[in-house]
Amino acid sequence: MTRFLVRLAAVIAGMAPLVCRAESSALTLDLTDHWVGITALVLFVLAYTFVIIEEFTHLRKSKPVMLAAGIIWAIIAYQYATESIPHASEVAVRHFLTEFGELFLFLLTAMTYVNSMSERRIFEALRSWLVRRQFSYQRLFWITGILAFFLSPVIDNLTTALVMCAVLLAVGKDSPKFVSIGCVNIVVAANAGGAFSPFGDITTLMVWQTGLVDFQTFFALFVPAAVNYLVPAVVMSLAIPKENPAVDGEVITMKRGARPIMFLFGCTITTAVAFHNFLHLPPFLGMMTGLAYLQFYGYYLRRTHVVTPDNQQHHGHAGEVTAFDGFREIARAEWDTLLFFFGVIMCVGGLGFIGYLDQLSQYAYTELGATIANVLVGIASAIVDNIPVMVAVLQMNPEMDLVQWLLVTLTAGVGGSLLSIGSAAGVALMGQARGQYTFFSHLKWTPAIAAGFALSIWVHLIINDSYVGVLPG
Image (cartoon, rainbow, N blue to C red; front, side):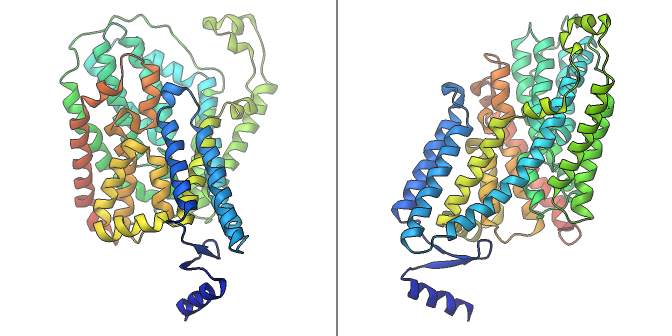
């Protein structure tokens, strides 16, 4: 009966074919073969080309995708207006805005905490401690990799990679070979560690926020993620110089309030999980509540801040004389990244509204099968970046069991390690270790990384397949 009514509405409106979408509660046109669809596709490809070559053009990645998003929805709305369906595109845009808003507020809180920990010199103190231990290159290779693997689930893979790379550059200034291999190791470790935690990567966060995978279920990916990291790490460790670096590192201590801020970050994560799991509220609300914890503690730090001669001369850090300001740390958030997410979600949403994602889902998940499709998602994320790829998968919302949703979470998270340009961590380290860690120095180890990628998929399908009826979801 419903199908008959949809067909009848199509005839009355003079349009065909029409598809009824529950999320927009509006009839939508198939514009995949229309000039609107083709133009939108070209605009997205062009915009993403600028994103890929950002390193050479120095044009921030948010700018082209935001412009493309606006034009794509403008031409969609124009076509719908000419077909006398003026509000369908508006309803869809509001739906995608809600999707972005939840992600935005969640990330804004996480970024503010990371900025606050950086301002309190937590990461500098960690780097200083590691440098002063005077470990061998072999031990530093494993220490930085393992730390990256276990830190990225908490403070995200990009921040983790930058902190660990700073350690490599400090101790490996006389060994470019060590820095080069160490950076590859850190990128692989950070991406793998981020795959088994909702907080480790944008893709895992999006999957968790949609409610497709429960918080605790992500940890079923721990063993596959560890395999993904360890296989290439063992191979690369054979090429590490068997020497001890000569380092005389400066002693850096954390600022007042550093440890309480770390504790409050843990409380914030706990609040977000509790809101989602027990109160069935969106995780961003728990994160924003946690941001209030930081702001109140920041108020206390400001009220009790005292400037003394010791403050001003403490290890030459003039910043000691400045009181902590929570709003300053909010302002220091990665706004280019946040606006980039807006552009990507709106662009991919527009392509989905046109009808391209339905066609892609039909081919990939129906004709090829979920396993092959999800492996291809991981490979594609090494070229296109995992964020738009995962946004597309979530908007397709293919019929998959929990094991397959975990698989696509794993492949999208670790697939970017195949190439240096495949993840934010890789791109950032190419800039930080310019001339030592490059696209081709990473490409040299791609076969070993691909072996870890393939083995991690196999391990996941073996160990987690039997839990499909047990894991929540």
